[in-house]
Length: 196
Image 1 (cartoon, helix red, strand yellow):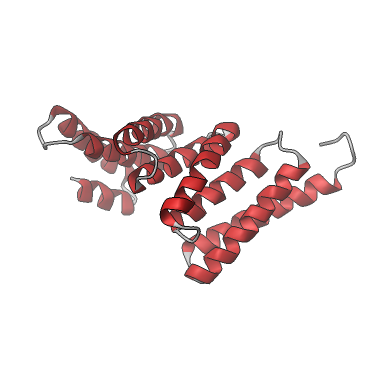
Image 2 (tube, rainbow, N blue to C red):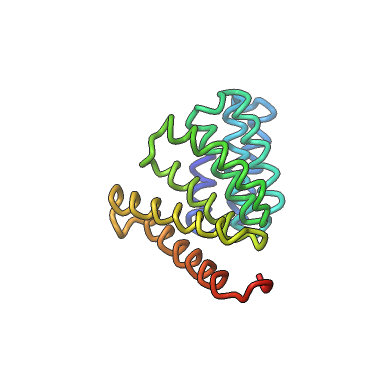
């Protein structure tokens, strides 16, 4: 059922993928598929991805939050599944413009990801990118905060280019975010005092 849901989602059949994933989750919860707790939390994350694809971001956030805290309780913060769930949860917070919560979560989990996965891992770089996005996306960010986001993205961009190459999807995503962050920085630096 997981493969069917993923295939439907990959093909852009988001409503159908949602139905399959809801059914799969219900079967796991009922114990018909021998569902372990971790499998249930992972399926919640997959279901949340369907909600995200359909623009149902609040529902996705609730599931990703539940999955993160459930997996954290089961496996501890240094487990790869926990780090993935934390990253997914942080992205949902960012999408809903809950910047302080996204920054707080990524600030806590980035050192863990570095320690467990290394500075060059995709997940570590994705968390750092989400952190930087949450900074420059926040209208309440100070000029120094925005500068920090540009510095962070510059470092992530260099690492991604070196490790994955310029054509890798992560590298391209970071480059786009760097352009956005630089534009925000330029705007903030050229604003007359009192207008920001």
